[in-house]
Amino acid sequence: MKIAVIGADGQLGTDICQVLKQENHDISALTIDHIEVSNIQSVSTVLKEIKPQLVINTAAFHHVEKCEDDPQKAFAVNALGPRNISQVCNDLDAVLLQISTDYVFDGKKRAPYIETDKPMPLNVYANTKLSGEHFVEAIARKFYILRVSGIYGKSPCLGKGGLNFVELMIKLSKEREEVRVVDDEFLTPTPTLEVSRQIAKLISADAPYGIYHTTSEGSCSWYQFANEIFQITKPNIKFNKANPGEFAVKVNRPQYSVLENKALKDLGINILRHWKDGLHEYLASR
Ligand SMILES: NC(=O)c1ccc[n+]([C@@H]2O[C@H](COP(=O)([O-])OP(=O)(O)OC[C@H]3O[C@@H](n4cnc5c(N)ncnc54)[C@H](OP(=O)(O)O)[C@@H]3O)[C@@H](O)[C@H]2O)c1
Image 1: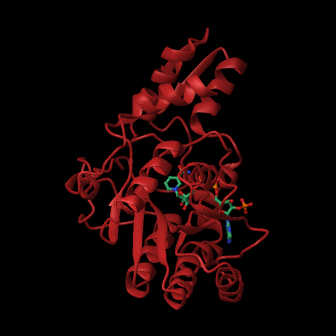
Image 2 (image 1 turned 60 degrees about the horizontal axis):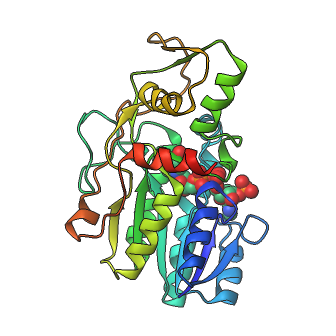
């Protein structure tokens, strides 16, 4: 299949390109140097030249604090971007696969969210990502929206200054005598390689269009995630839970953003493993 990947040099985009190339898809890897998603002219010119059958949009302005400071840019990239791509996909009769986030929920459910649960975003980033979902649902004739959570991969996360959580913990454990991590925010860490494999499966299964939660199985707090990392890497440090309020929090975030891959499981095509399995594979290959 002819596939255009937007954000192709990002953390997730890099793995998507690699996995889909291995599946013999014809990939056009588009970076910010090729396409600006908030500009309809750029989106139209670039995609109409390529004429893809599928467009995968990983591009986002997703530094949560910076989004709060610049809501107009956040809306332009995270909401108008998917709107522009939806319009051009319709012109090309192409499918749009839009990457979204667990942060569309407020976390009050305290049980894994399924695709039909009502979103209730808490911050500018989450609001603009949800607006992007709404534009896609309202405009694109053929679309998948994949909500991912706590992603990390071999390629640096460009929007968040490079280091993913695993690499940050390993770096801190080499620099400090003690590492302290919050234990009151719950998520499902998910390797970008696993998301990419699931995307390949979704495409080959010709799955019905709609929203899909796409995260590893199980859940943990950031402290439990770090604990598992240190069980494997065995640094010589003191490792403790941070006290409530120890780290200043400038932006509201969901304290619980665990997703259930119900739609994938109902179709029998969920291939995401437990988050600990994904972490072991990531650490073994770095
Ligand atoms: N990271 C997480 O933990 C997380 C959690 C849930 C959901 N997500 C979602 O997952 C997706 C992928 O995240 P990621 O971690 O792979 O991010 P990333 O490493 O920052 O990659 C994002 C890519 O998009 C490009 N980009 C940014 N703004 C653009 C624009 N206006 N036009 C065209 N390209 C643009 C970036 O290019 P430059 O950096 O060169 O500008 C980069 O290549 C995003 O949609 C994000 O909202 C991420």
